[in-house]
Image (tube, rainbow over all chains, first blue to last red; front, side):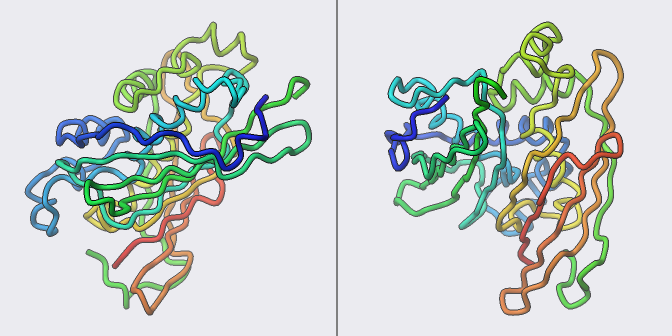
Length: 147
Length: 138
């Protein structure tokens, strides 16, 4: 299951992640994106500094934080019983190729519901000037032993 | 770029069908770094009691907003995007799982010139994403 005492716990900040133009294209193709996420000229014409990452791209940064939780013995998170409940991304600005980002995950809440645990995470993503770029909100459902 | 003034709540702004194959799952695993074997191995999916190999929820979420981005012409106009994962998309070993996406205007905010676009995402007549909404800047 999961240790309810990790509610409020903040995990260490990630190393810097450099958003690559070809990584954006790879992710865009994998999510069946069209020209808006593949065509550099279109992105520049729209006023962006480079290719814009698809809206779900920050999941890559959220994963870094989640790996820390899974590795954290105190959390006691049994990942084999985890189901993704919900996911949200809130953008302060678009993420573009060339961005250097760091992320930090906090356990927002741990709730018990009918034998299951619902764990909500908040991952904040910053640029090098410590300006918030995006917040990723995620809830995992940890199924109980009988569920 | 769509015109905010021309939009009404309830307008359908985009509709698109997608085909998700095992190939799509492998490609998404590589692009996202999510290599959970329930997304490509039948034996592992079966062993943990699943009806079959499932598409990554994040893949379905990632695909579902693409018709909206195509309509906008710019991924940078997405202010926020959230979904609930309500039902899994089972992807057969051969052949596609067919996903349909319909995007409609759910709300309009005159002050900020933002529109909430609500997505209806279905697989085999079932809605697979609940409360699937995105606010976009127009």
